[in-house]
Amino acid sequence: MKKFVIILIVVLLSMTVSSCTASEKPEALVELSCGKVEYLNYRCTLPDGRLLLTGGTRRDEYGGDAAWIMCLNTDRTISWEYISRKDGYTSAEEATVLTDGTVAVIMEDYPRKRAVMFFTPDGKKARKKLDLKKKRGIIYTITPSFIMSYDDVSKKAEDYRYKTILYDWKGKEINRYDGLIMKDGYGYIVPNNDEYVFFGHDAVFNGHAMIQKLDGSLDKVLWETRMDWQLSGSDTAMLDYALKTSDGGYVAWLREGCPGENEWSSYEWAHFLVKFDADGRLLWVKGKDEYGPDTGYLFLHDGKIGIFCKDSLQIDASSYICWLDMDGNKLGNTEVKLNPDDFRVLRDYMEPETAEEKRTTIMDQQQFIPMDDGLWVMATCFAANDHGEEGFSTIFDSQEIVMFKIPET
Image (tube, rainbow, N blue to C red):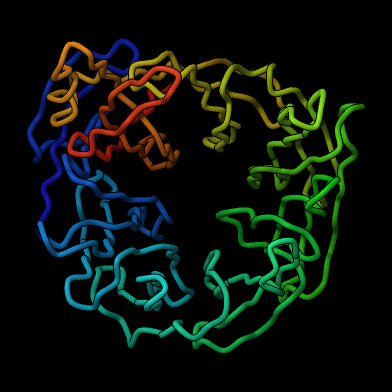
C-alpha cells in the first residue's frame, strides 16, 4: 500500500504558521499516519542516515492486524515500506543492521509464529527468513552479533529467577546465563552501543541499582558497580534508563523507593540523575527536582544531555527540554509546543459531540531522534474524552503518528 506523507508547518517557539505540499522539504512537522489505529517505533538509523521504523497497521477494513516496516529518507519522506499482507505476521518488533548491511527485523504473530525477516537496505527480500517459533523465551533485543531472549526458570509466580539466552543469526544458541538481561540481576542493555553494558538492579526485593559490563562473549563480568541507597529510608533502588555519553561514560536515571507510613501505603519514589565513567565508577548524583517537573525522557544530542520536561500529556501543554553538559551543569532550556489546530485529522475531533463531553488532546510515546539536519521527535498524538480523575478514553480515529523538529538553541 502506497502512503503519502502530508507535511504541515506548525508553531514551534516563534515560527510562523504556514503550509506546504507533500513535495516540499519538511520543516517542522511530518504526519506519518493519520486517522488509523496504527503504531510505529523508531528502531535504528541506517549507515546512510535513513530511519528504520517498525510496528503494526491494518491490511484492510476486515483483514486484521499486519506487521509494518517503514524506512524514511533523511528528509522524512518514505524510502520503502513492507506490510505483511500474505505471511500472517501481525507486528514488526526489534530491528537492526547486520555487519554485511542486511536489515534484520523480528516479525511476530504471538504465540502462533515468530521469525526474523531480512531485507536489503532498499527493502528487497535479502535471504530466507529465520524461523524462531521453537526458540525458548521472549525476544528482548537484537544486535549485529546476536538475538537476545529471556525466559522464566520456573512457572511459579513467586519464583523470580530468569535465564538470558543468546542465539546467532543462524538460530544456533551461543550462550546463556542467570539473570534477566543483566547477568545475575534484573535489567536492560544500554541502547545504540557497541559494547555490552547493562543497567538495572541486583535483586527483586531490597535491591540496589547496578550497572555492569560484560565481555564480547557475555560470559564474564569486566566491571560492575552497585550503588548505595541515597536516602536513609530507602529499601530498594534501580537504574531505569542509561545511555552512553560522548565522553565514553554513562548517564542514567536512578529511582529509589521508600515504604509508605503503613503496610497499605504505596511506595514513595525519589529520582536522581547519575553519571558513571567509562569503567563504571560513579562520578556524581544529582536530584531530579533540579531539572524540572515530569522529567522521564532522557536523551543525548550534539554532545549534550537532554531531559524532556512536561506538565501533562496534553499536546499544547507547557513543555521544554532542559540541556546539561556532561558534568550535569544546566546549559539552558528549549521550549517545545505544538498547536492541535495544525494536525490534519486530530483537529476535527476537538469539539465534543455532547454538552456533557470534555475533549483533550494527548501526545505520547515520544522518541528523540538525532538527524543530520537537527533533532526530531517521533510521537503518537490523539484526541480523547477527558473524564477528570477517572482518566481519559481515546478517540481512535483521531490518532496521528508524527515527527516534529526541535528548534535549534
